[in-house]
Image 1: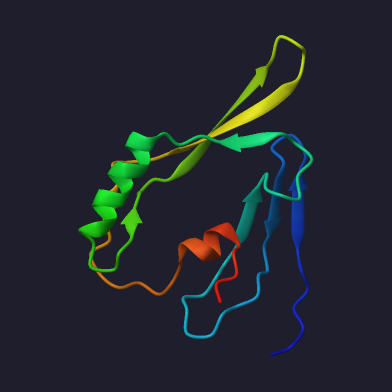
Image 2 (image 1 turned 60 degrees about the horizontal axis):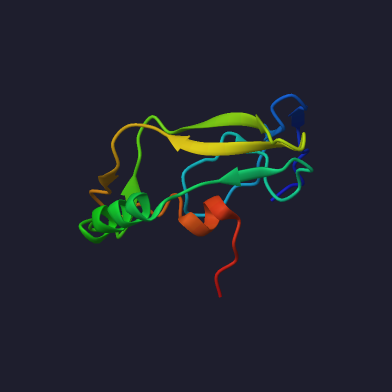
Length: 121
């Protein structure tokens, strides 16, 4: 495969990095664009919050799925900026979308380790 020029845009207000020419993975759907909002490379104090009830609900939906995964259509992220009493500012990130449903079929296109950028042995 020939070398691909990486085309990235960065919006500092959103702390978003966009790659408009991502590397392709064999056997998967064509990846048209990849965007990162925040993350470990960011200098911002950003946090995801999940409570036990939310996680248990997602796990129950996952157990009923043929593929063992949950889908949330119309997915997005809501970011709230807070300032503590001491003046420290931090962002709370919330996943938003339609009602979570079990995935109806096997879909090798994306996996949670891909989303989290985790290497699974």
